[in-house]
Length: 202
Length: 202
DNA sequence: ACCTGAACACCGTTCAAGT
DNA sequence: ACCTGAACACCGTTCAAGT
Image (cartoon, rainbow over all chains, first blue to last red; front, side, top):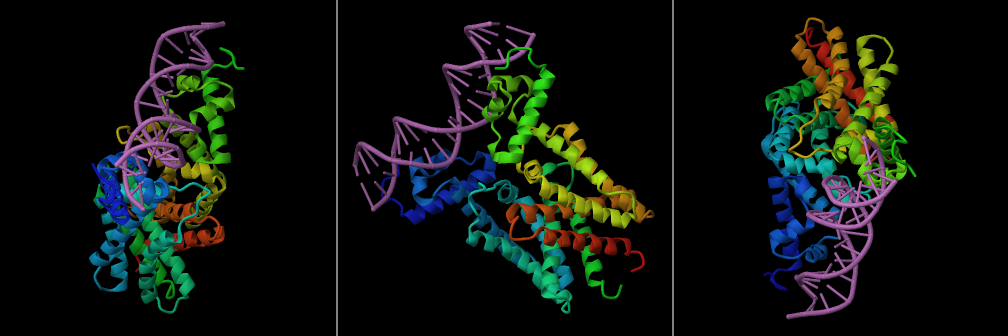
């Protein structure tokens, strides 16, 4: 029985976002509908369009929140250590987040906004931040390599780790154990770094 | 003005499939709707449910056709040569297919069937075939390594290549040139193989 | 036996009308 | 000024009715 001015627009916005996240977590991205969210927060459909321009906008904000949480966990779970070891920890930590927050994480890639809409800059920046972490570490590993080459290497290895996660987790979460997936990540990262950092004395 | 028995069920099935592919190619996966397909082939919506159980079934068959074409191109474009070189050619060839058939290719990963439905075996087999190619080559590269380890390595490197393709092509097809993407793939594959094949004498 | 097309349930979005 | 909820256009799916 929510009446006007019960909540500020900002409060409603947060309620919508939280409700959306809960629905995705408990019932999956496919269950995320405007009427469902409205029911959850005690308002009607129209109210949601007061705080988000449309469903796509709402979804982008849910995805952004997930990216923030991912970033926080990556930093928390990978304490200072030797660069090579830390890249490996970052990669394992990414897998951990993906498997523990599967619905929210996979939603980031499942959802595509229509061709005529472009990705908001504030969102793209959050995506780029993920790459920066690895880039810095690779820079420490091979200080004499060009920054542009280091950037490419970071992008390659991080995309590679993501590829293993997405192919392993989305198709067959059960029959391939999480440990097998982690082994593949270790394999990719260790061999890549051995090949990359060792290229000078080869 | 299609009347009964103008086409056999098998013919209609193919017409539906071809129409669906054309729509995806020309207007994207988001534009693929039953009514649109019906219009294209000169039948009405009901007819489509004579040859496919539902939209999900139809989509799986479109995806299967794409996987077949991908397999064919991988074989055609990567003639016999040294194993290491051929893995690289496979990877480049995969990127080429993905970028030239972007809508059909990305649809494979954009579409997820509902949680209560499981992936048909005939479809899963087609997916596995892609990995087998790399697995065989890595087997040639390091004949004394366990088959299970070779399988893991193949999965790791191929998933890695896929990861680069999907992150590079789906987000920003324009501002990151296709050559940059290819460079990242070369980087990943060469360094991985250098690290992997060279691990014994390290 | 094959095919139609109206009908149904459900979706995102809008906006005149209420408080 | 905030919020409602009926209305609209569109979606996948079904199935009694036609030929």
